[in-house]
Length: 211
Ligand code: DC
Image 1 (cartoon, rainbow, N blue to C red):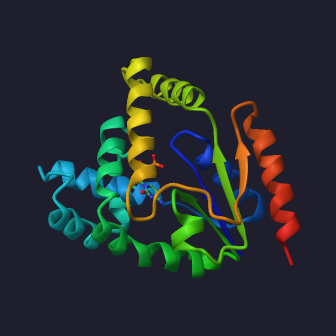
Image 2 (cartoon, rainbow, N blue to C red; image 1 turned 30 degrees about the vertical axis):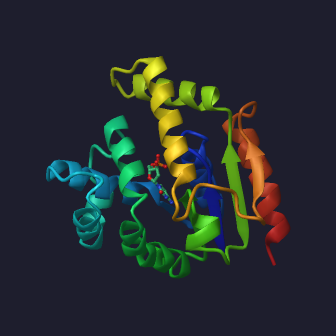
C-alpha cells in the first residue's frame, strides 16, 4: 500500500507520516530530505542554487548517506531546497529513487508512506491513500518558529514567517510539480487540531481504503 502525505512547510506532514508508518509498520520516506540533501551539497560546494546543470549533477550523484546527513533542517538549506527543487532536471533525477522506495519499500515492509509536495500528483499518482494537510501560514510560521527555538537555533518570528511565505509561493508557482492537492486527495486543515486528532482523521481515511 502506498500512502501519500503532501502539503506546505510545517503543516505537520512529518509527524503524521511517522505516526502512520509506526501504526502500520510501513516504511517512511521524507521526500523533502532528498531535496534538502541536494541543496546542502550545492551550498557546501559553493554552487549557485539556480545553476540548473550543476544542481542536476549533484542530484544525480546523491548517496543514501547524504539524505541522512546532519544540518539538513536549517532555514538556509530549506530555502535553497525550494530553489533547487524548481529545476526540472533535479526533479527528474530524484524521481526514480522515490518511486523505487514506494514500490519496493526497504526491509520487506508491506507499505510505504511518502511525504512531500508532489507525491500524490507526480511521484505516486497511483497511491491508494492521498492526504493533503495544510494550515494557515501564521499557524505554520509559529510552529516552525517554536521548532527552531527548541532546536537551539536563533530565530526571529517575523523572519521565519516571511521566509515561509516566500517558500510557499515558490513551491506553489513553479512550472514542474507545483504544490497542490491531487484531485483525489483528502484535505485536512491541521490549524485547530493536535497531532493525535490529525492522526485519528488519517486513520479513518486509510481504513476506508484498505481492501
Ligand atoms: O518539506 P521540506 O521543508 O523538507 O522541503 C524542502 C523543500 O523541498 C521544499 O521547500 C520544496 C522541496 N520539495 C519538493 O519540491 N518536493 C517534495 N516532494 C518535497 C520537497
